[in-house]
Amino acid sequence: QVRLMETGGGSVQTGDSLRLSCVVSGDTYTYASNCMGWFRQTPGQEREGVATISGSGGTTTYADSVKGRFTISRDNAKNMIYLQMNSVKPEDTATYYCARRIYVNCAPQIQEADFNYWGQGTQVTVSS
Image (cartoon, rainbow, N blue to C red):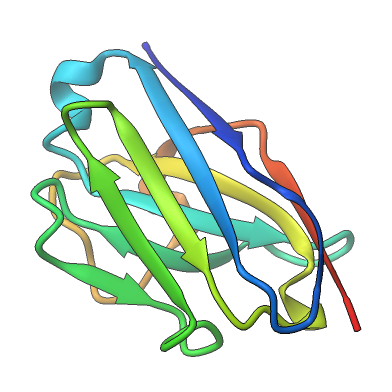
């Protein structure tokens, strides 16, 4: 069993920076191998893939909406996943979730159905 817990959300202003963290517990042996991702969701909308990172951290993928502003990283020694959010915009307002992909490798397209373990989410609110 894998458990994920996100922290770091909050209320910020447009242009600010914020770092989200996700700690992985339970089956941390396979955690270090699997692709991990960040998703976000607003009420009434489908969950959107934001970024993924390979087990080694060497390969990352981003949604077009966050490219150049967000950075995903991981520290396998600490069982942590991070999402550095810079130059945030009101449209970044959402609940952010970290998740573990079923497969070891990440895919070019970020698809929710490929992820089988999820955290409970952390709210990010960006005001103009």
